[in-house]
Amino acid sequence: MTRRFQGDRLLVATHNTGKLEEIAALLQPFGVAVVGAAEMNLPEPAETGTTFVENARIKAHAAAKATGLPALSDDSGIEIDALGGAPGVYTADWAETPNGRDFVMAMTKTVEKLTASGHPRPWTARFCCTLVLAWPDGHDEVFPGTIEGEITWPMRGTQGHGYDPIFQPNGHSISFGEMDRWQKNRISHRADAFEKFVAGCFG
Image 1 (cartoon, rainbow, N blue to C red):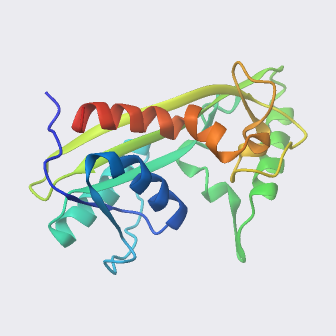
Image 2 (image 1 turned 90 degrees about the vertical axis):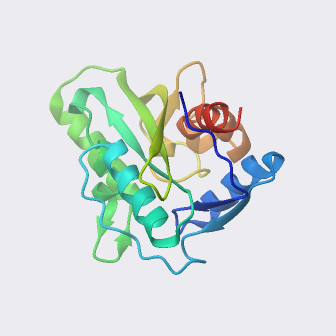
């Protein structure tokens, strides 16, 4: 039985203002006030896990313990079958440079690896998002979401972020990079995880 959310304040363990706004809008109908990690002066814990759920748990439990509030966090990335599921939890790491993240470089590197693998197209892939809601007593609930698709090349579109310009979801003829954010938000891996979260903890 999923533990239901009973309070009126939820800490979202992210320093990303866009993500915070998205979650606040989603929870507005339930009368839940959302507060972000930056507002609470929380440091970002080291994400030392090797799976999405491990990293999401690290962030959620650290925030719940530090504040005494229930805390929601997510970890997400892209898995490419021809690369054995890589980059997976290391999705953002593939974009790291001494001057910050460069996703054009990361996407280029990804397609070079795919080409070198000799694996024929379609290059099937999925975006994954795991949400974890943790309580100060150490209990948590886990909600995984995915969207299946394939890697396309060259890059298409300037919307979204990360690997969106080379990911075309199944059943669509355009990439995530060509979709407006509302269209993407309705079908994305994060939308899938949020739907399960709301049904489990608020439904």
